[in-house]
Picture 1: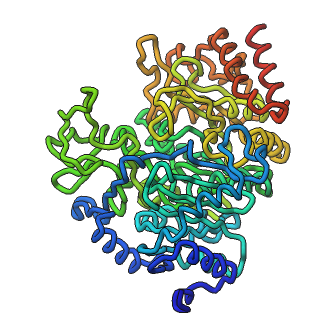
Picture 2 (picture 1 turned 180 degrees about the horizontal axis):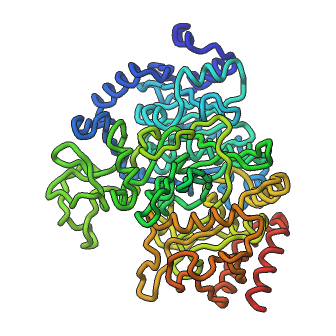
Picture 3 (picture 1 turned 180 degrees about the vertical axis):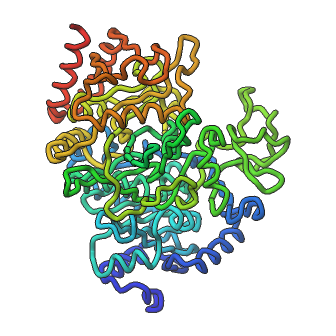
Length: 591
């Protein structure tokens, strides 16, 4: 490395670390990203020349490009994702664990000379508003232009981050290399005790945009436990009523279960005067304010959303957000240079190029004789948050927005009612700890299988989840003006498998009830009734069929036994407060 490479870097800690990585990976060229428009144009030009990006129709989709990943590399690899702590119990039973030394030995063997014929990009970035006291600094080293251009969208990237870092040693270190994109040499290693992330063998965003799930959740959740705040897999939205009052809600749903759709919700025509403002669609960092309330910032700068199913009915604001300056991954390329996916507004093109780069028609069949999909089930778009028509005017507020309600959700066909409210904070923590949902294409494993996903954080908690539950309980003791907690289920079905609730914009009716409950000091009123599982809307409060609010006591008792199968994994570390909540529920169900 010549001195000129270091001209933009004054930080001695960063310089020292970069020298170590260069010695290990031996890149042929080094580029320190500054985040400028000129840099973006040059990198895009280079990516087009190598085929890493394909230019789309610049008249219809200005600034938009298409990327294809290796067919063996299309989703997060939870089975190859590790938490590397000195003691295994600190990672807990729900995380894959590897000792830090073994993990480094394994990954460094792959990283050795891996960039000999490649450029090493150094990506400084800020997670959170540039001047927020709650933001964090990261440095990602990568050999992928695709990663650099996505990080530019998803974070505040470049000189702004180096200026914020100054001479501090407080930054997250991340090294990524595509290596040979070999599933047998693919690892995503997290070292929360060292604020370090190592990712090799993948080019898929969820594994390689180290700012996102890696830092913003796995590392940040550990830091939050240590420092007294919450890093959560939650959207943040504001609901403005006809009088102009805005109430902010944080909500947790597993990936691809309607979270982005809810974050960008369009109010139904039956609710004139209401507006919904998007603060964030995926991640919330929450701190306790001076007034005893929880305040949340969205640490991201863009949206990394699932394409299939996104259309003008399910999410019109997302559709508008991705019309410019967007990177599409693993979608169909139409003959006119635009994109398509299953669930798009338009009907399938008669002929096109599928997500693998092969010729495709909607009549094609796979080896099982089933229709062959043109877009990969987990295909994505990466778009700047500022593109969103309903982005909140204060979405980058340094102090964040005050949270009045926390909503937990999942995809349960039969068990959970449309909405119910926790009796108190610990009961709400129990509701979050017992979340379950059907697996989606964004997750590793068998689609349709019901799995426990506490707080929608099971794949993202960077330490022992029993301690994570305790942290939530302890936070409740410190929050003097806590938000109310609710559970929703948009996906309840009738005996024929049809959804009982229309969802989409109608979900605002449920949020309105939650907001009204949050405004009250006591949930027992003319708008709520007490049930064994919590407070539910009084009949007629929400325009919905009664079947959506039925509580089958036998099914709930079976649910408790199923919960225990999960809780037993934690042994004596599991917090007694949650066992007490479970026992209270059992007594109410049997009385």
